Length: 583
Image (cartoon, rainbow, N blue to C red):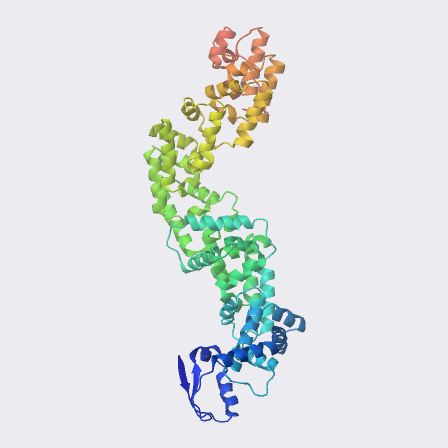
């Protein structure tokens, strides 16, 4: 498309709209230069072949190195040191290319800058851009050219000179960002959990924060970018360019000092900033007001700084308002505030869940008979269950139903070991079931084993179950023996080796002089207190020279034992209480 441009100094002249936009700010000077040329009698269009020849000859005479030197010179005129000028010009290739193309367009369309060298033309185009070198500097920091141009628009030249911007960026990096902290993975994990569980209406600050995270996820590296100082800084400024308008000394520094005095370690302040950037725009009074809500949550150790680190989004108004909703909901289901506050302490992402979502889970518990006191037990042990999706919870219920359990039994298992219902079927539960099958607990016996000791389904295979099996095998017991013991006494593999199994085996063998195989017939032996029951009864029997099985020795209550082995109606020996009692 061509437009006709008329002046008093030359005839109508064909000019592309594309070029008119591209060299905006240069046109007035172009008219002045054209005034020195002879009048042109008619409009014209540049011949493509001639234009290509001009571009070719132009490329030969004007290299990018010369353009970089010109940019470096221009930056020096703006007050930047020679070393920094050279660095910036060498690290801003797209900016240099943009200036070179500006000069090329002038040459191509015969809009010459009479009497100016190539260097002067580059400097002239750079000056006409109006950003005073900020775009070049921002690109040298790693921003794309388009991002650099967008950010520069927020930095008026009358208040932000290039040297002052460079100084500010250095200060901001020193204050807000540190070398990768050892817990950056916790920050990233926490962000993912917040985004996954958020189910309430959100305020503007939280909306901007989510937008920041979504932009990060769309980039190569995703949220992992936050683990790297320079990349995190760039991403933060791209989403919140107005941060560069704020004073380091009068705004950022007081906020950071306040967070430090609140109890946040200096090296972890950046985690809070990256998790909830809008707080940097607040004044101290607003920040203090938002933090007052933290003290409404009943924490045993009053460590509110720890809660802020775990869940900085509690600073937002929408999350704070939802906390009030959660308290009202807990009252309606007869769960005390203390219980909800404890749940929030361990799983603060509950704060982002709507009460309707929580109610759907509580309704699922009620279907299994888990209400009131039992519900309190479930929330106390596994508050993360409230974060589950009902369909995922029902999948585990179905797993138990397929084993032959009825709803009442499943409800008892839920109340006793709610961690099971927060676990993954494929990664945890199915693996444990398969493991039990391999050690001799067949599908026939599996329901009975789980009914008596459901904790087996959430015990670590390598660190717990396998190690205890290996210990029993080293004592001389076979896999078949151990399988029989687990089938008849399911909690066996839940006992600590050092705290329970080893000291009781040593007393059995060394003091009672019994073979290890005696525990195969009566594995419940490990469930009795060594100091309060096993030793006292053994010494009574030894004193009377009585021989009996472990079951007869330990399976009776005190009255039955006294009547059978002592000839009286009550046991007269009261064993001393030991602090080393393992059970």
